[in-house]
Length: 58
Ligand SMILES: [Zn+2]
Image (cartoon, helix red, strand yellow):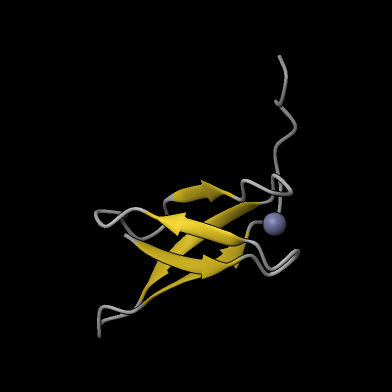
């Protein structure tokens, strides 16, 4: 399992070993949603998700 720092609060966010490109992980500290980005070299990084839907808390 890899960790990557949250771009917002710098907390360590766990990235599952089997995470797929585009998978969403949530920062345990600030709750920010982050999208897993994989490049062809196998490196993994997190990108901040811009919310487009507002179906939270239905
Ligand atoms: Zn955070």
